[in-house]
Image (cartoon, rainbow, N blue to C red; front, side):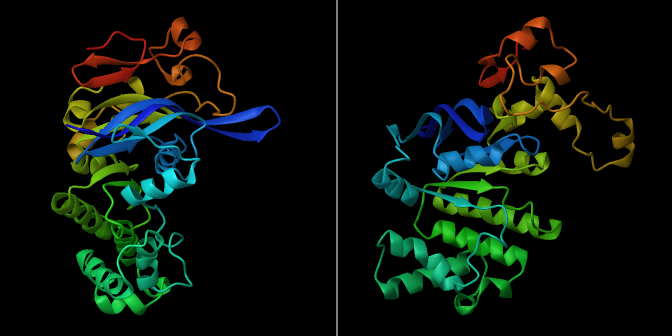
Amino acid sequence: MDKLITLDHVSKHFHVGKGQTLVAVNDISLDIYKGETLGVVGESGCGKSTLGRVVMGIYPATKGKILYNGKEVNMRHTKDRYNYSRKAQIIFQDPYASLNPRMTVGSIIAEGMEIHKMYDKEKRTQRVYELLETVGLNREHANRFPHEFSGGQRQRIGIARALAVEPEFIVCDEPISALDVSIQSQIINLLKDLQKSHGFTYMFIAHDLNIVKYISDRIAVMYLGNLVELADSDEIYAHTLHPYSQALLASVPIPDPDKEAQKEVSVLSGDVPSPINPKPGCPFANRCKYATEKCHKESPKLREARPGHFVSCHLDME
């Protein structure tokens, strides 16, 4: 498979006070291949959404490089960002906050096409109608305002806006977490159908591990800004290697009361360390029952423990 996006030792730091630096994303390197869905999972505050926004150029990376089709994208360069935004789009988590309440739905969807000088006015209007129908809405909705729609409908509008400039890559930043369970499956199936028909590449960020398994080809597990495990979806569920990933998967409820009652629950001890001025060593060391002295002193590097299965841990794993 051809690489579409490459992250090369990407980090994102925020200065939060005198001599204090919050490390939101720490030295992440990975490839995203054309046509695949890369799922990104982890606890709240682990840096998933920040990583997605760095990939989009919303936050400039503090360190490292982002390559698109093998060419570096300089997010601080206006022309590079402009060209990249035609190829990469984002669906935001909150469908209530991500749509401008003063603009009609038609204007919201057409805005990207206007910025990139795509089509004339008549063709743009026709394209808006096509996009609304593609995401399961009606062309009559183009003249309405966001407050007139439900959460699920607003998220469909957000998806239509992302599709408007005909991108190749879409960051889905927890696109279903603010929606009712009954609506979530509709949005997930819509995203899968669009991927089949248009060949999109997704970076799908979520909390729900069952949904991530359903939609993703590969899964990346993050902890405190670090990439701790990366593998194919089936592989990571069948042979979970990192102690944090094991605890994360053990927390997923089983839809069978008898099996759920018999399941061994892996409760993590200790507190999540502060991401501000992090200490040396493995970030998971103070919560890991297998931690050794080396874990507290030396940060592990991401290595291939099984074919195509990468883990950031000092323990011997196969």
